Length: 340
Image (tube, rainbow, N blue to C red):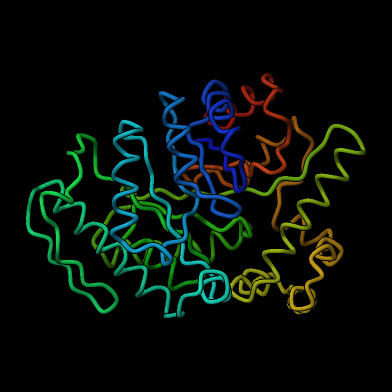
């Protein structure tokens, strides 16, 4: 079991010191999300200030960037990090693609399948010196001259992971990606009954083996050492569950557990812009279903109970951690227990 840290939000000026700290504590990887900043810029800084840990986007939104733009960025970061880069891609949901990024929405699974194929065709042309001639329904990429070919990359091919929630995207991940980011809004039941069967169907259809694939889960954790920490952590976890649950795309995860009525209430709150009320809709049952709720000294064991034999990487969600990163004893013990 590998143990990682995810930063959905970050300030670039904080990244060098934070990356060094994460590496020193023994984490295996540091993932940067794309919420309030560009994860590729953060990886560049982290690569310069670390030696060992894997660095990945968790995730970068694929469609606003052309495959060529993403290919250049990932190629450069793989060289800068000396082979420690993972390219995590996601489709985002329709509202964000159309209203935040200003693009026309299309069926995301075939779009992302072609996007990844185009990326790999570009990297193959650069690596092998073969002509670039990719033609698909969304992208035609067939011009590459020596002037625009980047410097050689001596490191392995860049693994591509994708985020997936529904059955179609999970199956796509099993077919074409090296790994999957399971959405933070999940339960042990959803991993067993939804995620694993669809991934397996995907990699079997592609003639692949389980060993060629990595399953990454980001855990929402509610924990604390005193009443104040417990209350703040539990409310934050509820707010996160409510935020994700308000999105129609993720409704399937609530419905699996019979949380249909809260899903309707969360969607109505989102439509009204009443974001601060999400936590009030999330019941204790929902919190226990989708989060790890435990005192700090029990967090590792609870994670082992839920995810052992199911996943390859456990990711701590970096907005609210069980303990601050300055608590070296906690993190070393927790990481050691999870890797045991």
